[in-house]
Length: 182
Image 1 (cartoon, rainbow, N blue to C red):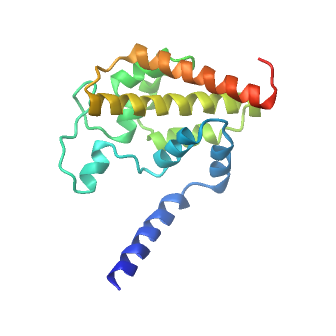
Image 2: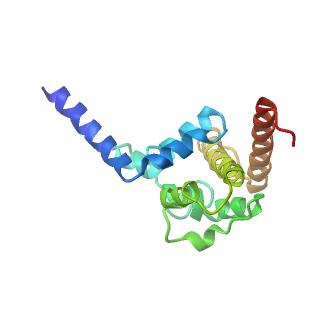
């Protein structure tokens, strides 16, 4: 009986998490032409299920919760992806030129939803913008994991160049697959 109650509680929590995200957002998310690993990563990010240090502590895992690049501030989702000075440099240096310093009041989830829900741009432009944003977020995450698990030295320029390389590769693969000429 206890196991059934735990499963019910887990399902209830999961349903609650997705209730505040409208179905059109999920449809838009799954339509973005990127590798499934990146789309799944964004899905996890929107569900607040990435194992950032704050989430690990919430699950009872003992760890020091500090930013891995500047060692100041807690590693929360919004800090890791928008507010850390390291990441701000990455966003500003990217082809998108986003100034995340102006986004201090937004959570990463709110910021992402605003881009996914954007209706004021043509579909092709929105697709391209989401491809870039999702790829940069995924590259930040993989770079963070290399810093955490492999002792890599954080390097914003390397991250910018890596994400730009992935963006070009994914757009080229999409164009080849769909017969679109660049």
